[in-house]
Amino acid sequence: MEPAAPITQRHIVRISHPPLPSSPPSAGAAHVPITSKRPGKLAETVFRAACATAVFVPLLVLAWLIGDVVATGLGRIDWSFFSNTDSMRPGRAGILPPLVGTLWLMILTSVISLPLGVGAAVYLEEYGKRSRIAGVIEVAIANLAGVPSVIYGLLGLALFVRAFGLGEVVIAGALTLSLLVLPVVIVSAREALRTVPDSLREAALGLGATRWQMVRKVVLPQALPGILTGAILATSRAIGETAPLVVVGAATFMTGIPDGIDSDFTALPMQVYVWTANAKHEYMVNAAAAIIVLMTTLLILNSAAIMLRNRYQRRI
Image (cartoon, rainbow, N blue to C red; front, side):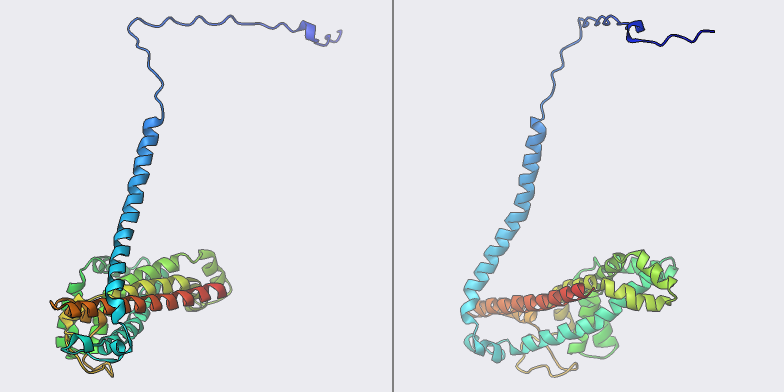
């Protein structure tokens, strides 16, 4: 048998199909124009403008309020305003007792709420994820996060002031504020623990570490910046609360300085509340000056906590 001849280009026959006849448009069909994208762009522009307005209008109002407070009370701030106690004469009144009381409350609240909040977060994330107790605690935290602050004041009055017999003292106010900020600390600490990769946990356990060693030496150092951020938010909320302190029994007029956890106390928000309730213009000036001090104290605390958080981030 002879081998087949190779196929060359001249043997290839190209078959061209005639174009299909286009169907004529029906008589009832209407011509549909192509819609432009201009309405969509207009809606997007309007939405962006609404979002920008929602951001900048509150900021402008806040800037106006802060500017008015600073313009009203800045001239009242001097050394005597920090060193004097409250007085019936507005020009001689000072904020020494509420300033010391605020520092007492912040220190005690941090010491009480941070270990409890971080411990609860570690238990929920590392030990009791599927237990019934963890489920009950999670439901309780979710409910406590939405409770008004005055309810915490009533709880502190009934539990710490009366049931435990502590009285209207510094430690009762600190315990009440600790209950107030505890949900914030727990939630933020849990979110910080969730950011730690599971591979680090598995590596630590694979090298023979116990679960507690893994949590203490691997997980907590990695999550510490986020935990400190939660502490900042919790402290920021506690320092400006007035309603719980009013219910617990913070003093409205105090000439002494708190010298221990069992002393009578007042705080800067409480002092601002008392001065703004007075009709005299001089007390309004004192209230504006106290607000400036309160905001400055808050900024100092937040700055210190942020510096501490950044330091731990660099070490990690």
